[in-house]
Image (tube, rainbow, N blue to C red):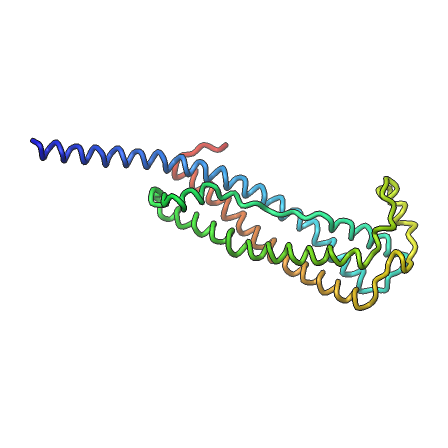
Length: 228
């Protein structure tokens, strides 16, 4: 009788632990889906940002290949001003970190999903981070060089600029456009690097967006989670 009671108690404890883990697993998966939804929103925004910036990069590159004239100086001024905004992404990995740090990946019973989560995390924290760091660095180098290319200090800081009148009336002079040939060549090189890296990053971010979207659907189906 004592043996039977101990055995039954053991089984009961295992059953409680099993159902407790199942409940905890579903909670974590719901939280993970919410994190992934935030990731997909950020990835869409940042890829759209770079889609809009690549034509700007190409236009600046084209202008710098030609002699600077009154005809294209207004366009160059407008384009370079657009470089003073940079969109980055934030990885929403709170749930993944909790699973990793507490050793709770064991409660994810679907090993295929567990593997996909780990792979997604690795791409985001390793490969994409390196690429984004490289992109941010080269973007910073370009924006640091632009004041050497064009003297923004002499431009009026009022609605006059926004109307475009200043750009249209801007005269080419050493005070406005002090850059020499070597500096222009250097900037052209940085612009080329920025174009190259941004293209790679966009491609990989689009691929990661597909992975995140697919993972959301797989998790919802496996754990019967309602869209929200």
